[in-house]
Length: 288
Image (tube, rainbow, N blue to C red):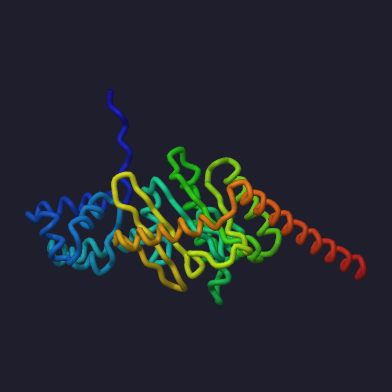
């Protein structure tokens, strides 16, 4: 009995064409990697459609294979709707079997509501337009669908209490956002832990880290700062990031305590929203 084959994704088509052109040129992955100046493993990832080359790498591929800019031009059509330093991570998380996220100042993107995402994107851009924000919000929401899949990766979320209390988008947006986090944790879709402010210094205090594990590849770590991010594949650095995450996790509240804290702070945001509504209503009554 034959099974229906899934259609190739655009990245897989790119990788398949790269493999065909490489073989037609009589090159092995090792030979091409020497010319492109990368590892044979990276060539393998490109050909499998798991990753995309950078513009500079695509340019070197075209020179090596004599394809006259073919792969560089095609790459432009595959450009993901993410910051250039995050595009690879967005691809890799689709293949991950386990994800461990830390949110120090923000709720991680995979868990964000549309209203919360929009408020974050507005803050990043001094001159924004509604259409641009709409596209960014939609792209982030699509990433979040990863956690709805039957084969969703095992997901750990470690949040600093500061991320729960920061008023992003106002109290109504925050209440909705924290209710979503609590619902996901209560349903078992994510393993949630919170680092209370009272816990003081912890191992992840200085930065954001995102850990990805895979069934058939070595784990990776991604760290991000202002307008930049870096994907780490060096085993020693990845191990150090996992160690920092584990240390911070040891300072966090228990799963049940964390869920209760998120719910309590969501209620505080809801109360703040109702108080603001009541003040506005009283002001309107006085004007009338």
